[in-house]
Image (tube, rainbow, N blue to C red; front, side, top):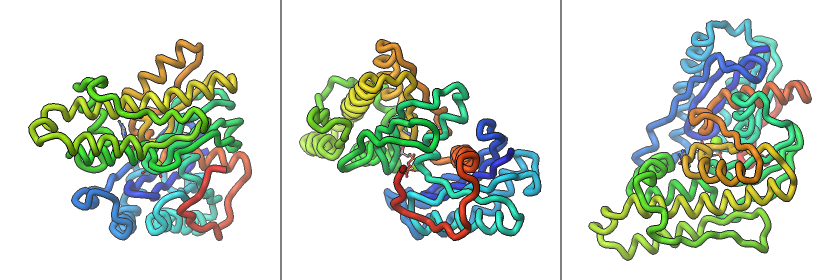
Amino acid sequence: MLTLGIETSCDETSVAVVADGKWILSNIILSQVEHKKFGGVVPEIASRAHLKTIVPIYRQALQEASITLDDIDIVAATMGPGLVGALLVGLTFAKGLAFASEKPFVAVNHIEGHLAANLLKHHDLAARHLTLIISGGHTMLVEVKTFGEYELLGQTKDDAAGEAFDKVAKLLDLGYPGGAQLDKLAQQGNPDYVRFPRAIMKDQGYQFSFSGLKTAVALHIKKLTPEQLDRHRADIAASFQEAVAEVLVTKTLKAAQERNISDVTLSGGVAANSRIRQLLQERLKQAGKRLLYPPNELCTDNAAMIAAAGYYRFEKEGASEFIVNAVPYLRLE
Ligand SMILES: Nc1ncnc2c1ncn2[C@@H]1O[C@H](COP(=O)(O)OP(=O)(O)OP(=O)(O)O)[C@@H](O)[C@H]1O
Ligand SMILES: [Mg+2]
């Protein structure tokens, strides 16, 4: 079964072809550079850019997979969460394509897509597992009972992990989005340079909070002269990253132990972070548990993960109605 996946929820235009929810035949990703000078994604510009590029990217995805539309069995597209104008471009394109070619159309939850990125690479992942979703818009600890059945254990009360990375990266003049740059810089820094607050919030279970940490970094930077900031940029990056990693890892390990879950996955863009991967790997290994995460290119937004999620959704409950609309604040149910 070949699934065509389409992703336009934010600032990546992506189309992919995936076989049986497992094998990537093509995964074309175009990251919009138009937003860089604004220091954040401008929704109107994102929609217009998707409109311009969706057809050529779709053609490229078919070409790279060496197939034609006739060979496709399912057309899947992200319906939310995301920017409504951006979502509508991919969703409408997918519906039109599916309707005209009389193929089943499947609407996909973008967060479920991030989870499914693990299914593309780890074919032996236990159906029941724990996943830490850390992306630009979300921080959630979720028990996956089986694909499509989720229990939300906790989420962020304020900023998402990726948002915190991007805001601190901005404070350190690393550009936007600066999560990956911050990770790289932190590798040359001293994580013990400043002990930033860790919001472990013992009385609040698996809830997270990153806004206090972000403010602490901002206040620290404010006290430095430009020369001091230059000298300690990598140390601040490493100290911030260590605080984020420690909170995420402590809560994830606790949940895996309390619930007796042996397979743990990371999903979402921040799952590319080297220190979070390393620390979680270390702690889970000591506890006799296994950590799995997608390769970097499948952590951030891409259509292969949407195709995979679409395939498993279709297996579970068949096609979606063509009437399905874009839902900007869609939740993972
Ligand atoms: N190595 C890294 N370390 C930390 N953060 C990273 C790294 N690589 C990417 N990121 C962050 O990942 C985020 C992008 O991830 P993703 O594409 O999953 O988010 P999104 O699609 O914007 O949000 P959502 O999926 O919640 O709608 C950005 O905040 C980016 O800075
Ligand atoms: Mg995403």
